[in-house]
Length: 308
Image 1 (cartoon, rainbow, N blue to C red):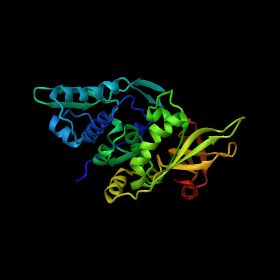
Image 2 (image 1 turned 90 degrees about the vertical axis):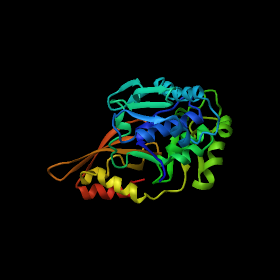
Image 3 (image 1 turned 90 degrees about the horizontal axis):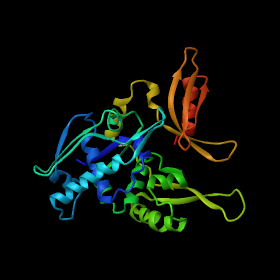
């Protein structure tokens, strides 16, 4: 059976600064192994981890231990932002991370604060992909793009502004657009175009004088139909009819700017008088607003019209 990596979509908002391709492979392998285990203490052998990341280098125990250590070290160097609580804290994903070079084992436990990323998935609010396919990708930029692409696998569409793309991909600040074309976009397209039909469209800021500057990208790729296993998982996670819509995304045009906004459904409140109040959040600036509908049927018709 294929090894599957699965985590909350929130993790895709976290840039992974300075991770090498090898370290990304190891991190995703660890996420796969600890998923749905809460905060249990788990043990993995070096050989097991090496096999899953398809390690081809002839690393010494010391060298491999250092690679494992770098994964946690680089995570700890990051700050994780909790949007709902307006908190920015050190990204201590693991409460226990012990490398035993004598027994060649890694002992690990997810922290209580961050266990939500890898447990109790809400419908539609998770990213899922095959570990083996991720590991086979060569470029770290491709790996980072790939997991965001997989978040939107059901729509085959990802729109992102330039600044956010540079942040998520951890692109050096001194990279010009020509550098991004050659060093970031070209490797991504080379590895993913054939299988996923990846197309990259640039968007431009036409305001002001002079030559329009690139303002973002629209990525389109093959849609993926949910597998039977995914459908079963979704059904288990749905507790009320409204749960089906939570964390789903819709795309609507802004009447002022003429631009399309991607909006996430955050909550649905069915009132006693039959009215339905839906809270939505813009994925770009996290601005929240409420939409009121006359009935659940009215809301569902709206949802079908704008869902992506």
